[in-house]
Length: 213
Image 1 (cartoon, rainbow, N blue to C red):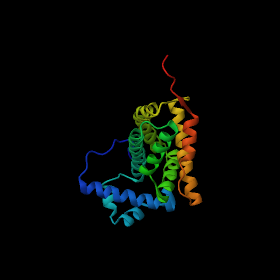
Image 2: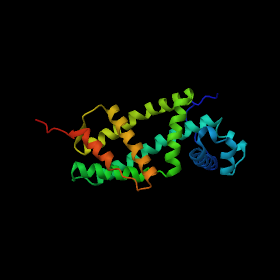
Image 3: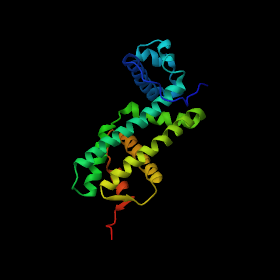
């Protein structure tokens, strides 16, 4: 197996960036319909309109493609969190409950995922759980990004006048689980995504910052 722990590729040309994006988009559709194991490199290439050569000039194998998609998801979540915090700060002066609602709505709008991506997210995590090298790459990148998330989310919670009543790691785990559940519920029911349960959870694991004595 190739080294899927390799860092992000160096700065790519616009043309190669577009090629990688088309291959990744095709992979998301294929993984959603057939699963990662069931979807072949050939199928992904055909859907993207490229040859196998184009695939292997961008990804050493399907495992590297999976790791790239996992990393992309983490990056997208961070960007969505940044936009949510911008929306929160723009609503300064309102109640903590309102700020939480505004931030969560902005977060979901920024990171809005369609059916294929929601299904592929589950496939990616299951695949990582089964394949040690992919799991190691995912966990290593997650741990590195957690420090950035910690600062970002901590500042946002403090800006809303709140503090966590549980550890940050536990808070991220709980909120991540709720985030996945509301997406799956929307997918299964066919109803619009409802982020309200995440707001209920967030307010349940925070409290107002005590006034300094």
